[in-house]
Image 1 (tube, rainbow, N blue to C red):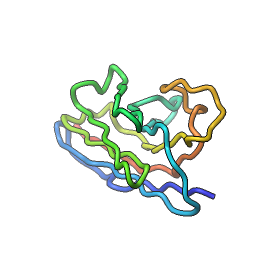
Image 2: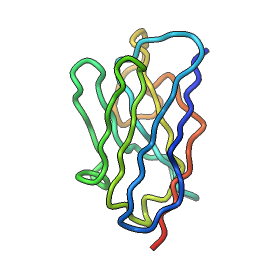
Image 3: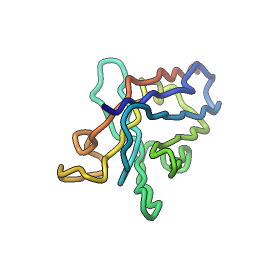
Length: 128
C-alpha cells in the first residue's frame, strides 16, 4: 500500500506564499505523473497542477498560472507546490496525487480519477 502525506499548509495573508510538500511511504512505486488538486468548502474538487515525471512537462489551472509552480522530486516520486501571490480564493484543502507507472487507467492530467494514489490533504487558508 502506498501512502501520501501532504505538509506545508497553513494560514497566510493575501499576497503571501506557501510551499506544499508530499511524502510517500509504504511499498515502493514509480510514478509517471504527479500533481495537486484542491477542494474548497462547498465546492467540487478541482485540478491545480500536474507534472510528468519523464520530461518535466507541467500543466496548470488557469486560476493559478504565473503564481504557482509544481516541481517533482524524482527520486521520491512525489510533487511539491510553491504558491506565491496567494489569494483568498485559493483557500482550500490541497491534495497531492500520483499516477503509478504501471497504471492502466486512461490519463487526463486534470482528472483526479486518473491518479492512483492521493493523500489526506493539507489546509491552506488565505485571509484578505
